[in-house]
Image 1 (cartoon, helix red, strand yellow):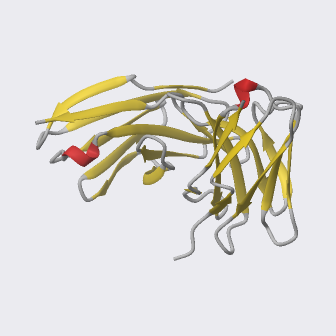
Image 2 (spheres, each protein chain N blue to C red):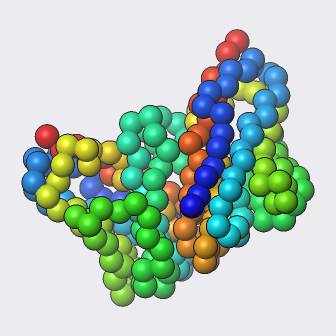
Image 3 (cartoon, chains in turn red, orange):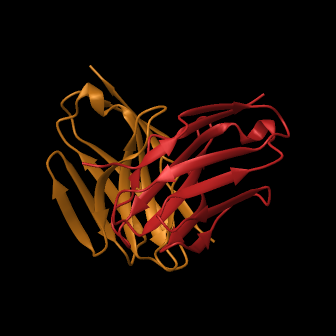
Length: 111
Length: 110
C-alpha cells in the first residue's frame, strides 16, 4: 500500500541557508500535518492543511512557511536556518479525522 | 492551551502486562490516538478512541474516559520489541490539529 513519502531523507545545511522539505501524502487523503521532533522530544505540531487550505497552525516560526499544492503534495520552506532547527521533520496525512499516517521523516542538520 | 501528560519512563518484564496512562486538558476534543515510536523512526498508529470505553486490538487495548480527560494504553504479553516510546495524541479544534503528549519511554527487560 502507498505510504506517505518525504524527501529528502537527510539534509545538511549551513546557518542562514534555506531548506525545502517535500511531502507526498497517501492518495485520497485530504489532510496533511507537519511536525518537528528534536532529540528526545515529542513531535511538535507545526501546521496542517485540509483540502489544500491551511487549517491549523502550531508553534511554527515566522521563518518557516508551508503550502499544499493542487496535486496535494506539501512543502515546508525554512529560511534563515538556525542551529536549533536541526531536528526530524515528519509529515503525516489522514482522511478527515481518521488515523494519521506518518512519513519516514527528513533529518535536517544545520551546521 | 493544550496539556497532555504521560509518565516519562516505565520498565516492565517480558511477558508481563503494562499500563501507560495519559491525562489531557484540551480546548475541544475530537478523539485520542496512541502511537508507538522507535528511536529515529516515524510514529506508527496503535489505536484510536473517540467514545468512552475500551478498544481492543490484539495485544494492545486502549481506554478512554472523556469526562475525566483520561486514557490508558494496555500492552499484554510484552515482548522485547515493544521497547519504544508510546505517544498519546489528541485531536483538537476543528479536527485538523493532532497534539502529542510528552511520550512514555517503555523498556522491556528479561
